[in-house]
Length: 125
Image (tube, rainbow, N blue to C red; front, side, top):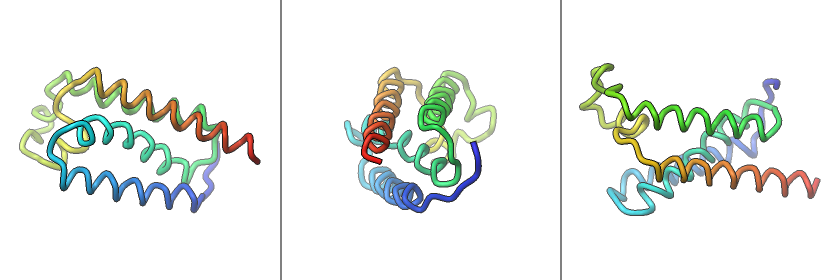
């Protein structure tokens, strides 16, 4: 693993962040807000990290999945209350407030998508 800037992944990060922001602003519930947003967030995190870190896709995708799972399992605790952030919309948006198995599935599918994309990309190089 080494630090190396990648403008393609940075561009993807910016676009994915814009999509996530639009989902957060305009959709308050439903499949796209609760499931597709979680699917996209792991891809966003991967692209953000990949824009500055050069490493094997499997390692980075696994790290992203561990981070996403970690945050999700923290939702089983009173973390927001312990941090006195229970009234913070931003904290609830970033850390979430309720544990859901469907979120874990969405994260996993997002990481699988990343690995498929990266495998196809390497096959064409």
